[in-house]
Image (cartoon, rainbow, N blue to C red; front, side, top):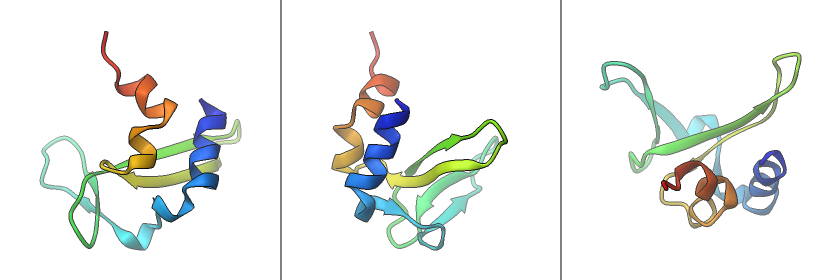
Length: 81
């Protein structure tokens, strides 16, 4: 899965959103939801942190990103049996 996260960022960097493209929708009671600023589209934030707690990878992708939806990461996490 770690390699898949790195592959997503390397192969689909144009679909990885920078912090200035995002906003936190705090209308939910329990948690802020990351959304793309221009469209309000829900985003998934993906990250890998090292043993020292620093982020090795950290980015967000729109929930409707084809790159995300067809990735083995997405299929592993969101597939129900």
